[in-house]
Length: 317
Image 1 (cartoon, rainbow, N blue to C red):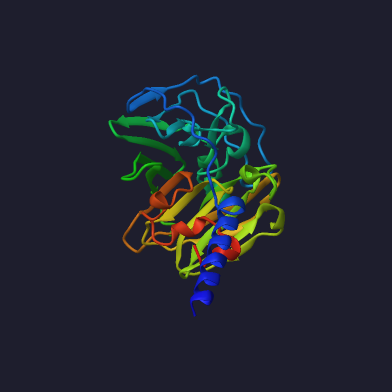
Image 2 (cartoon, rainbow, N blue to C red):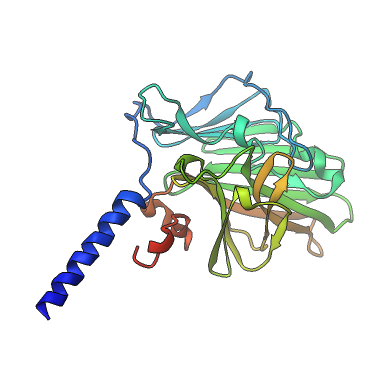
């Protein structure tokens, strides 16, 4: 009996060693923390404009004014064009181990300009995806608003309650009698990205949680659009170490659509815009997590720690 026990212990240690050496999702080296305090920042409005992708998810040109939030963990910049998040940077993390390496960008104008934008299936509302929004800076909350014809949209952004998180509330108001305004679409994904299993920071994939089941697909496997329906909790796009996740906090349940359009590949929430009788507006709320895949952080959202893919060791982990 003692011999069997020792054999079991040795085998267990061997499995653990193999997992730690070759499978554990260890983030890239952390750069020295910059000495800064929480503040609002204003950045150069003359940032390069990405060439637009074809189709609905065309890139949004950057506006003249970019404002944001900044702390030691996350820097968020907003664009007046589209009233959207323009970029998210993680100052603590670098692209490589070199000291002068660029910081990690989970959202950037060059790779995923479309991510976290607001798009519409109704052609009459398409202009609201890239219109110039008016900014109302209300302390800890950034409010962007725009109007086209009889429809207006208001977007509010504020810091989340946990690191690397934001909250966003989107209100769509119509001044005519139309009750069906099509779909509101919020994408996560990127342009010209591949899934390279040998380069963890380029192992791009889409992951989502529906009906308490987590599904994932690599960008190389994405072809035609696929609609997934059910009780949707969250949708994420990322690599082995980092991810941007949108979490549904609305009364309205969104579909998850995974697919490609032009050079863009990823997934998006698809909310129906249906105005209730006696109402002239609809409101949608999402939480946004954009940062490293750290278990302690991911556990703040039910089921989101499944973003970390342990592969064949999932049960053991």
